[in-house]
Image (cartoon, rainbow, N blue to C red; front, top):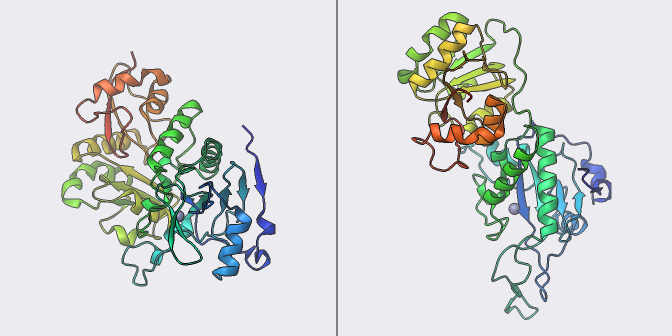
Length: 377
Ligand SMILES: [Zn+2]
């Protein structure tokens, strides 16, 4: 589908002064906002890129209008601020960097900002000229169907362009350090992700893995073992075979090695920490998840087959008729995994049945979970 986007970037106030700015790192996700602007007499969404940017630049004194995209109440998509420029949409004050989020600028630096015109809440009010609080009628309290359709299509297009996993499409209120109800109590970001997953299943799988290097020089690859006591023995054969650097200090790994293999579950090192390693310049960051036994199975198999890294989607083919394991990646669904491993998305119930001990709901997978995969029937 060809998405209709109106390019209004050059019409925005102060454009000449910021048009050559560059964000200080890669785009890793997208945040969804609402403008919290509604017509006082009808409750309908008001505003567009011009009015929001005019307010932020000319009333508030910002350098630019804050959002990369605006979607009007009627569903028109406006491209307002170049994607290469960091938006002002989710920054917070953290001078000591106690959150480890680039002094509060992480979301601005690495998340695109998409703003829906409208105010997605019941019980909205405004102050009249006499200073009295007045109600706004409870109409148009959620995004219109046209707005949702445009939002989902835009999010899919941006996810493809930047290889963004569905987990990294978030509502403003889901971003650490931000205390807000945005994009409004009536817009549930989890529902947006459900819709995006459904759209993923309808199309070929987006490539989420970066290129696997064909050769690695000494000192270029580190095996990170945040939970050393539990996992060191599991990694012995792998270390012996490939002689990577080995480190336990996750925070010191940033910017030091181009290739990083992390051994352990998200409890020991989170997906956000992996993302920060990528931001720090790592070309490839892979996780070997699971308990020490599962991790050792994966690492031993890599050592045996001479593969330093997990390859996706061409994982080493198992002998016919044998079970294997699969580590859930961000954005995975059972159908996608079935398509990848069996060549047929319809076979997902086989995987669900085989993993009843860890899966209670076929639509809930956690990245890092290790699934048992029965042989293809
Ligand atoms: Zn917001």
